[in-house]
Image (cartoon, rainbow, N blue to C red; front, side):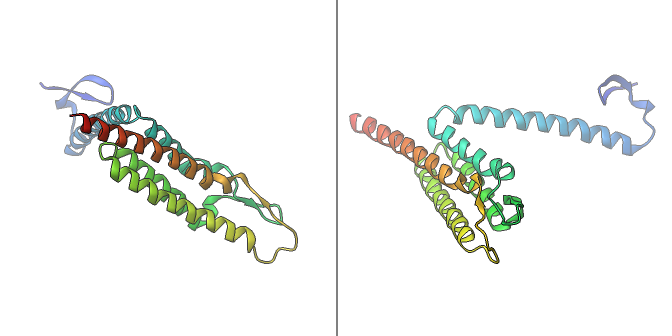
Length: 185
C-alpha cells in the first residue's frame, strides 16, 4: 500500500481513494501549494534585494499611494454631499493603477538604472495627466450652483510626483557613483 498527503492528514492510504478525480485533485492541490510557496519565497527574496536602495523605498511608497489610497480617500464631494472616489471615475482609477504598475516595473528594473530612470519619468507624466484630469473635473463640474469640496485624494498625484523625483535623484546619485568608480579603474 502506498502512503500520501491529503489535506493536512498524513498518511492516508492511496487505496482508500476510489476515483481518479480525487487523485488528480490531490496532485493539483499539492503542486499548487508547492508552487505558491516557491513563488512567494522568490518574490520576497527579490523584494529584500531591491529594497536595499532608497529609490526602491520611494517607488514602493508610490505603489501604495496609487493602488491603496485612492480607494479610501475621496477625490471630491459633490454639491449634494455625495463623495466621489476613484472607483467611480474610470479614467482616474485606470491612471492610478497604471501609475502603480509602472512603479512596480521600475522597482523590478533595479539592475538597469537608466531604464528605471526613464520608467519613473513616464510615471511622472501619468501622474501629471491625472493631476490635469482632476483640475479639469474640479473646475468644470456641470450643473453645480454651489462650490463642491475638494478631497484629499486629489493630492495623491502630487505626492507621487514628489516621491518619483526623490527616486530619480537617488538613481542619478547611484549612476554618478558607478561612473566615478569606473573612472578610477
